[in-house]
Amino acid sequence: MENNKKVIECVPNFSEGRDRAVMEAILEPFRTTPEVKLLDYSNDEDHNRMVVTLVGEPQAVKTAVIAAAKIAVAKIDLNKHEGQHPRMGAVDVIPFIPIRNVSLEEAVELSKEVGKVIGEEVGVPVFLYEKSATTPDRENLAKIRKGEFEGMAEKIKDPAWRPDFGPAERHATAGTVAVGARMPLVAYNVNLNTSDLSIADAIAKKVRFIGGGLRFCKAMGVELTDRHITQVSMNLTDYTKTSVYRAHELIRIEARRYGVEIVGAEIVGLVPLAALVDTAEYYLGLENFSIDQVLETRMME
Amino acid sequence: MENNKKVIECVPNFSEGRDRAVMEAILEPFRTTPEVKLLDYSNDEDHNRMVVTLVGEPQAVKTAVIAAAKIAVAKIDLNKHEGQHPRMGAVDVIPFIPIRNVSLEEAVELSKEVGKVIGEEVGVPVFLYEKSATTPDRENLAKIRKGEFEGMAEKIKDPAWRPDFGPAERHATAGTVAVGARMPLVAYNVNLNTSDLSIADAIAKKVRFIGGGLRFCKAMGVELTDRHITQVSMNLTDYTKTSVYRAHELIRIEARRYGVEIVGAEIVGLVPLAALVDTAEYYLGLENFSIDQVLETRMME
Image (cartoon, rainbow over all chains, first blue to last red):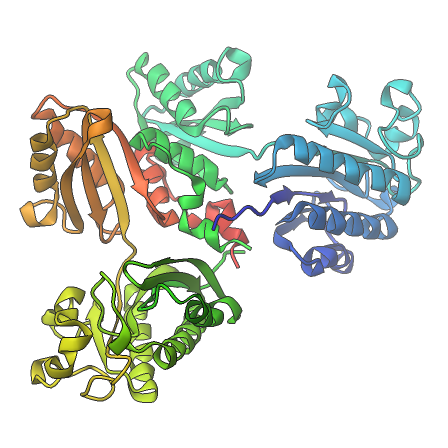
């Protein structure tokens, strides 16, 4: 009896972090749609933004997020919105993240289905981004969002910024939205027994993609001043291809050059079970292990 | 938003492995009781026995297992039962296993509640066993069951075998039942690059409890003849105290004496997520990691 249920995660960002009634209205579909589970939400008053995390069966998540987007579009007027976080729409960005029995390609497909509905039925222009992007220029959210709500009125008229779905004109109050798919991110930090930030920085540069290191690794050196140590702080943007253990062991190898050792590590925030399974498989040399052998996976709805 | 839900596992064994209608009747409460999930069941015609695995909220599991026990008592007549597996009752043994947010003590308490109902309301004598045992003699199921259904008619009259709950007399058709609590078992095997079984045996003897090794470790040497290697095959009976990684590394240390190396490992069957988390924490040196950071734990019902 394996659990073959498909699970996708969605982390929509809404441009409202102050008005409790509006936030609650937006959350409603996530609380009530069958086969959708609201995992977390956090609002920031300075950012005037709410970030929601939900998981569930892909079509159910699609239904819930479209319902929430409609509510946000109806209740949020970007002309009156101010906050520290850049934003271009009432629902600003909708990333889909494959979690279980879902491929990245399926997540891309789902993002396009959602984009099509928001563009054509809700009437808000949609830019597909990250893995769903239709041009390389649109992979990076910051590039799409540059100019924000205010600048989008003109930017969208440029043929290079014609939206992927919906009207080629900024929605008067709800702006535009980026919809896309990406792998889950693993925030992984490795501590070094040196207080010399230049060493942590040098190691970070060697393990990260742009320095010639691991393809799905972003990294930088960080000082943990209280503890008089430093840290290589990483984002692993595809743990299925750049494993946690590989980043860890590569840092160990580079650290030797400086006579430095790893003295600890941390995972910040959530981590997919598969990343832990991968770690155990590597260090124990497990053969033929399946994630379905983890008892808790049998208990997931 | 942590998931604080209590989850207990129960693996009741029923003395019916041939009659599909009886087996289905017994399974019914596990399929229909809210907050109970039937994970697996397997019947063996030679053993004439069915082993069921269910998980769920402790009180719901209690309700379901009592309902199933009543059905088994009504439908199974041990006087007509024959099979290769030793048995003393229609429902032969009911172990409770803490999985999540449940202590072993709570599992013991639950086993006693279930035992009391089966003894006093269903009328089948109950022996508490394993961690629920009221005397050291009753910790071992095989000792309780010795003599089986047939021998129990006399055995139960011995004051040393007075049941913990219910009548001091064998139930005429349903015999007796053992109810108890134990930790989940992790079946963990480590492969060695030697075909010499005496080496695997010697290592097994050093790492296991009875040889002076790890307290919650049973071990023996096994030949993998197809692969021309050997294996230390272990049962870790409390992975929270005898960690998978500790058993693994201790075998590595002992193997050195023979110039032998570990060339792989396997986990047989199910493993609690906490055992994998423990493994990753050790090898990566994770600080302040919580099992609640595993995304999938948020999705459990």
